[in-house]
Image (cartoon, rainbow, N blue to C red):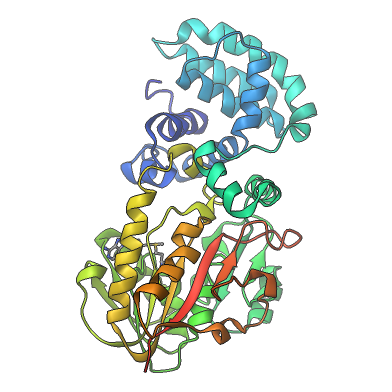
Length: 423
Ligand SMILES: C[S@@+](CC[C@H](N)C(=O)[O-])C[C@H]1O[C@@H](n2cnc3c(N)ncnc32)[C@H](O)[C@@H]1O
């Protein structure tokens, strides 16, 4: 598609092209400047439209296939996918259809298909809102569905797919007074202590944001630091720290935190978050594998497939194909071994990943226990409010999944284990 006209809808189509055609995550497309020409409100709308289309992609494709003889070229298909999703979700039919037709007509390469787009969308303007909710819940692509079915079974994966379609509420970690902030913000306190807001809100406009009273952090992600349970004054290394949600929790718990990350750009976010919340940490840009020192405890939130975050990042299954996960598993193993060398005797290492794949969680801990004599898993670290017995795994780690807490709005998929070095 050509760059003009640069409306939110045309920009959303470009985002979809990058995700589905070029294998780029939405965060990567945004960092590259795909939406930079738009005013902030249109930028936010383009992202909302693209995320909704990615969540329901399989449904949109089913409806489009009912009215087309051949699969349209990807840029045209993406315009159709966005338009069908909007129509299904109550968008103004005239505006949606005419802008989709205009976007295709403006493309020298595809303008001959604008009549087809018009005809298809006119039919779907009536049909899509009536049938959308009855269409099958979109399935994960095979590269991810296969391993997840092997690990958790078909029923659990279907429940995860329902959670992915539903999206995620907004979870906050508060410095203190969770009940007070939940009441002020119209949210609820979850059994694990996070504050959950069910309705989507503009985060920066909420009370307490400017004062740094809380930060956005999924309830599942917030459990890693609760498991580490830092003591005031204890020296903690946050080994892969950016953008810093867990650094803030550690600092708020009174730990003397060293926040380390290899990405200078992402470490700027840690510094901004510390400044907003008035919390302190020593920030270091560097490679975790080359870092030296001795700490009372280390938090290793290792780079991973991020397959636990699909509720919030529905682009991930469409942008990725599973290539690279083997390499990530090797990096996690090397980081885990190096992290152990930075823990004082008797100290603890909390290993976690936002992955649904046991190879990036349970198996890593099993393998570390086999490699390191005297290393144990601290099961007692999981005796925390809100943790359900069924979440605890055979090796005494904590497995969190998006289909848990369905009545509350789910949680990110995560794996967390507290390892203890021999004294
Ligand atoms: C899962 S994210 C961390 C999220 C963070 N702990 C939080 O709660 O906000 C993984 C991080 O690992 C960092 N990373 C990847 N390879 C690294 C390395 N060799 N050394 C240090 N950090 C690395 C990435 O830049 C990324 O910020």
